Image 1 (cartoon, rainbow, N blue to C red):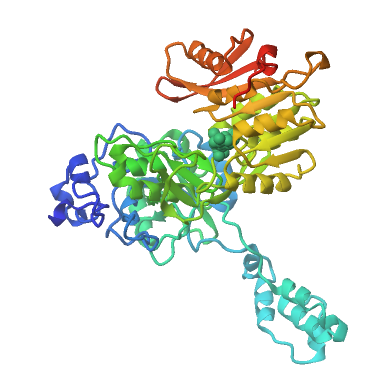
Image 2: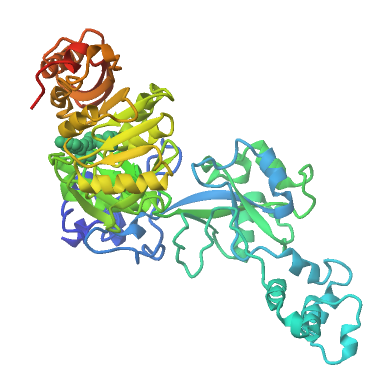
Length: 587
Ligand SMILES: C[S@@+](CC[C@H](N)C(=O)[O-])C[C@H]1O[C@@H](n2cnc3c(N)ncnc32)[C@H](O)[C@@H]1O
């Protein structure tokens, strides 16, 4: 039984997954309990989980301390090693040689073709102190070891850093000690950035942020011997003792002898015409290891999920939350999928959730299950430069409507007064308020109203928005019947499931006014869904029915397909006079 185990072996949801997906090779028996079989694919260029070999002995790389047992898998089983050849060159000549070897160097995604050799770098400061670096290097080294004994030690013109620091400390009076932080700054070593983006392995363990490591195979002496076979005795130049870099050669040259290498590489190895003076660069064999962090989400999921199961590709993001919409077939693997999504999208994503059920509540909220990461569903989203706080547990939010909201608001003019009947936490309200004269915003959900108020304050729009918390029909009726200081010119009704039915509330809104008053009729922007063959016709019919009137001049815009064959639409029309002045109202 144990021989069928895989990277998911400890996961109860994957009993047979990899046995279905990949055959296990008997020759790789020692890896059986940790890795799937790897079938080298010689036609394939570039790294892949199938091509590389697990490091030997398997499991010495990678630390799976991140694992939690309900959702995890053995991340170290994703380490793969590849053989590559490299030129070991002095740092000072590296970029010149790199230029000369374009087209012959390793060109794998996210792998730099210049690699550092751990422990090989010599700090410029140290190099200046070393004998032979400049004439007095040895003397400087000695002077560093000196401790100040007498006043005369401080009289020396050229104080070394140790003496200089001691001198400063000694000279500080009461006021000087107030500047003690400066003293600390003088002696604090500068932080070094890892510009290479590559890890340096220590104690055979990868650091968390590392995704690749390059090691030269064999010790120094063996290295020379190895290469003498390849290059011939003539190429056994004296060993270079300064800082070096590895220039990784294209994978085609991994196992080639000197004679089979391209002319450009041979020319560099021969020295002579290379830009570098002696010492001559050396050809070395390397092992390139790519860790779990290297592989992208698809590659990892493809390995983890059983064959035949489509790898879930996209997810929606709301602030720090990744929102999956897993299908039935993915549900048995939901925790592992979520963990990979989290691993591969940190730090932006901190929580991964899955929608449990279709939206059914009155407040259009979703039932979400937290699958990985922290359990907070309160997040901040930035949409079109505006910040919104939302609690996905209590309010509606849909990032996919961002461009539609932008389109709608772009149709408003600065003189407009907007009435947002189903405002939610305010994405249309606040965006419109930035442009128009005034906005009346309403929502039935008290939590949505709470966040709406927060977001209005957050975006400093409180002087241009008035908030209401009531049913949409009542809101329409009371707003239009009261003598508001701003006559409403635009109405937004974004509750696609039922908004068309709310249109009945507009019947008779100007009933008590005289037609001669010159009341400006508002433009209505109402959203709806349609599964009909002709969605525009279908939606127009529903609008007419709700208003008990035929709207002649209407523009219907297809917002997006929300499901196969199901359109979300936006209908825009001016409220017919006959509806606004109708004598009967919806009540
Ligand atoms: C689809 S959401 C749209 C929210 C917002 N316009 C947006 O784009 O995010 C619909 C909103 O209408 C609210 N709602 C549902 N029924 C309502 C009713 N009868 N009256 C007023 N608001 C209602 C819900 O609470 C929800 O916030």
